[in-house]
Structure formats: structure tokens, C-alpha cells
Image 1 (cartoon, rainbow, N blue to C red):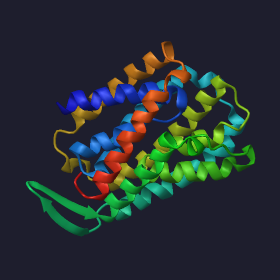
Image 2: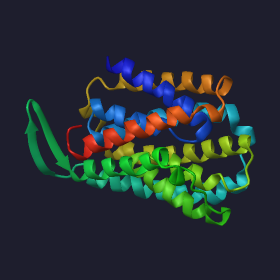
Image 3: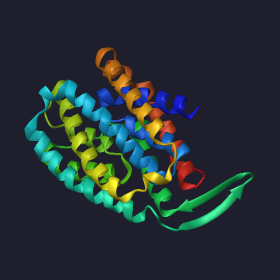
Image 4: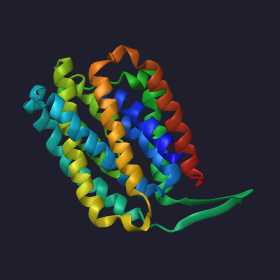
Length: 257
């Protein structure tokens, strides 16, 4: 059942992120959190996110605007390393509170509070029009890179900040999609290099199959997105992302997931 749930979510997320620049990570992280510990869910999401970004890059790389890429991407790269190391440092934090609801045992930790709070924050991008429409001058591209990279390394939520800053950088639609993808790719490379040395993947038995399945589901969603969807058709899906993100964020903060 988890394969069906995860792969279905990934296909929807890949469709959404092809045009908007974000969506796959925000959907996949809380879904993985249902089946795995939060720190591993962040890393597994990073693997799928990276594989899909690499595949997408092969489709759109000719339209990358390298001036914007350098201004935004280099700060994002170093910030992603810092955010990833922070995730590693708090990943094994002690339990702050433990309680039971019927047969459900819940553990509240620093990491869960942090990740859940970030999920609730980024849900604002889906629910509040004024927040969703935030746009920033192109001179703030390095700041956008720092924010996107840091949160990308810490929780995987890099796309909302990236899209908000890049939309005012003078890029056309093709350049926006390609440049956003190239930046996401280097953030994924940075954070996965840290995750690989700091997170205990071997503790999660039987996890490789679902990660591989999710990766191929992301490829399928990207192919469909490249052929079928227009950006204006995604409002309903983006609202669903926000609802799902907020719900999972609350459950993670409460220690239920």
C-alpha cells in the first residue's frame, strides 16, 4: 500500500513542480514521514528530488540563464551545506515529550518541531494569496539563494523561496523553468553529499525499493508535465498541496508521525 501512496503522490508532485518550480518535495516529505523517521524522510526525499531534477535538467538545460544561475545558485550551494549539517546535528536529538493516544505512541523531538513548523510556514504559499504572490527584486537574488539553499538543506523546502525570487528576475517561461531546475539540482547535490555521511540509512530496512519506485514515478510525472499541463491548470493541485502540507506538519509537531 505504501508503494501506491508514495508513487501516486510523486506523480502529482512532479507534475506540479515542472511548471511552478516547487511541489514535489513539499508533497513527498510528509508522505515519506508516514512510513519512516523524519530525518530519513528528508534524505529519501532528497534522493528522489535529485534524480527527478537531473532528469528534468536533461530536458530543459538549453534555456538556463547563467547570469541568474550564478547570482542565486552559488549562495544557495553554500547555504544548503550549512542547512544539511544543521539537520545532521539535531537529527539524533533527545525526546522532549512522550505520550500515548489509545494505541498510538507519540514522541515530540526538536527535529520534529522544526520540520513540522517549516511545513506549516510553507503551507502559507498555498493558502494565502498575498503570500503566494510575494515577489522580490532581482537585486535580492543572492538573499533568495541563501534562504532557498538553507531550507533546502534543512528540510527539503527550497522551491517556494526560489520561485518567489526568480519570478522577478526578468526570465521568460522557458528560462524560469530551466534556471530554477539547475539551481535545485546543485542544492540537491550539496545536501545529499552531507546526508550520505551523516544519516544512518542502514537503520531503515527495506527502504531502497520504495525510493527507487518513487524515483521512476517522478520521471513519469515529469514526462507528463512536459507534454500535457499548463501552469494555469495547477491551482487546485496547489491548494491540495497546502492542505496536505499543513496537516502533516501538525501531526509531525505533535509527534504522531
